[in-house]
Image (tube, one colour):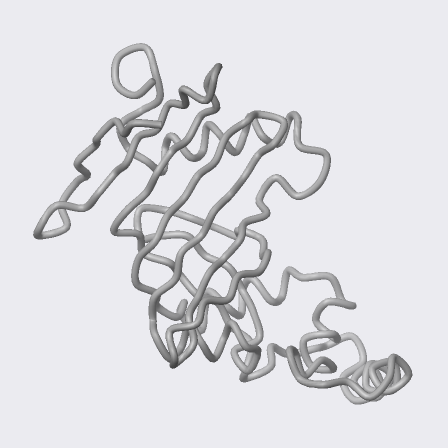
Length: 199
């Protein structure tokens, strides 16, 4: 699978290939990924988000930092993710430490969001109790009246970059004899060690 005749030995180049192939067959959101975090008691949480960028530094998604996931990730600075492409019978997993993207990165991404999504970033107290749908709709109307078309990025809204120390590629195999390859960062953080795993 990896190396000669297979995927490149750089995990981000390999991920690019799998994402391109997923875009051909996944009906909805080929960049959807489950992101797991833990609270201060070590109790895990998991939810779906969208991968919005990646490079050799890591994998990026954006969120309200006052949400449960935002607070948990800011508190622990660690996270894990899993992308599952059912049409391809593949999984991509990663885990590692987390950093906040730069202000410039967050601004550039926010400016490219649809107008309604920019309004929603201000109107929603994400993860907090909501009295009724009408309350949310009123807040949306208030934000629209306040900003019009020029909606700035809220101070509590930005992005996280998961910087993996471990990555796994999983390909379904007949009789559950799957192909699994784990990439780990060696001491010093240069390059990747690759191991084939039992299914």
